[in-house]
View 1 (cartoon, rainbow, N blue to C red):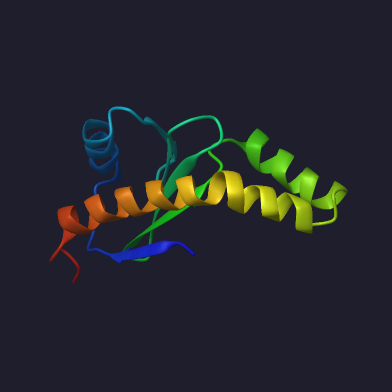
View 2 (cartoon, rainbow, N blue to C red; view 1 turned 90 degrees about the horizontal axis):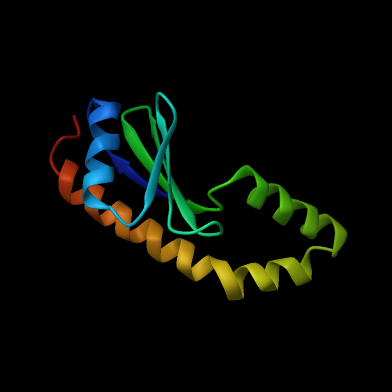
Length: 114
């Protein structure tokens, strides 16, 4: 489940720069004007989306190739096996990255929600 952080208006380019500064070990890519992808590796990442006066942080695969490969494996291997592998190999690392980024954003934007 994603973490939703209520905030007021956000200067998204400034937020992207702040994330780059706070998390130098992560690759930070601004995908659109309100969507940023942070990646720890080729298989572990988190997305930050600004929508309706809130930031949504979600642990995910950082590339379309990773997402597509996972979806293909789910279809080919009948759901159960890929989900077990996903939860054993990726989910905990994605969730911890999501919580780390969300904790920073909560402290950074505490009190800015209108």
